[in-house]
Length: 289
Image (cartoon, rainbow, N blue to C red):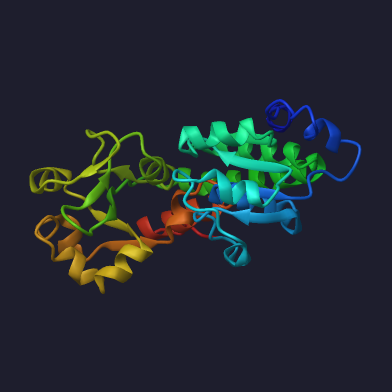
């Protein structure tokens, strides 16, 4: 698996430079990273001194917040990136808008686009792609080994749990009905990896939650980002909402919160994220080491 992951190739090099040219020296010197998971990987590979800017989703580690911010990954502008004169732009898949990405390509920037598959294999691909783009394949192999060992250990412990609570992930409560996660979302994948069942498996994507859908979901646990809990003021305030008040979760007082980048980032901290969520979902079972 390690050999396969490290065989992933980057996008074609800029004719004026890029990965082929970097092989003879120390790799790119001025990197812009767009995507929180990619920024985490750059730090994990020990190349953070090459970062000249990140996007607004790059909140971990905390030092990344001190770097210049080129904006939200799906609402970029070309000018702030071009002004930094980067010799490498790492882009998470679906970064945009597309006209801006085309403008960056037209300007001759070396751009490596990294797939955003929300799975353990997807994280392995991200690590391999970034390591190759930075010319740090040896560090990438070490990071992949660490990731595989940590993930295998967590997955083995979770596999021994025989109870799968119904979990409703609510990403937002502001400005209307709750916005909840259905099938095919990163939240649904995380719930499954942590030994739970997505309570909205009959709905696809993130959608507003009607009172009828909320009642049918009958969640045992409601899961929210920590910032959503902070905005609501208390767990009781969320559980008392009419969409949730009659649910098994409300009756049992089961509302859990997690940092959203850790929960949904699918970066090198995935084993930690799965372990943390599993402990919240199964507090009566020994999950953590």
